[in-house]
Length: 300
Image (cartoon, rainbow, N blue to C red):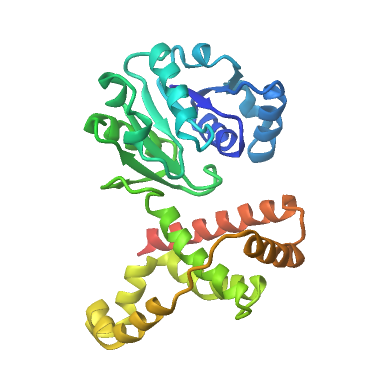
């Protein structure tokens, strides 16, 4: 298949590596003057230079989407910009091209609002988690005019590339993963800001307890198992009042200048300003965790 990736940032290049490794021909489009250098460097960093044999760079969007079977958009998180991109795509891509946005929160119905029905029927959100070539899950979110055929095609396409698509049944801003992340991070910011714990200590709480548990079961299964023979129902009947009290006491910090400065400085003091080595280590660790998870699931 011929895939067009719109945007040569981290997400776009990561998708490029994943899809080229899966045997697809990939066209990367971005108006930046250093497009070829950015793609070459990113592909070598995330994958192998050999994958560049399947990758073409084309700065002109209309030219890049001509002949595409699938178009994936990683443009700025700006509704007006996305609508402009998709208007061009709709005018120049083949009539059966699958149209996927990697937006992290904008609703597909809003993105497709100004598109003709035939294009809107093929457009949906396929939200990956960073980086897509490492983390397998993709949230599929259909808009009000998205056809069921497009959802099925998107799921099949992503599974063929080794991804784990999950369909979200209602359009909500931020979808599911980012809403969960936001809820946890809001309390993390509150705890650090109030001096309850440092960033490093909070990270240890997550990586030493919540992270491994949720990697193998998720919140609902974990609490269901935590309830013993009575499962989740028993847990909520006995521990629900305490949980409700904690809900009522959760922090609601404002991300004002003082809070941003405080938590950013504390994090930089702990981990340093450079992310290069940390990012590489994170990717290796996440790959190992996923491999262990898959091995356990195969044996169960």
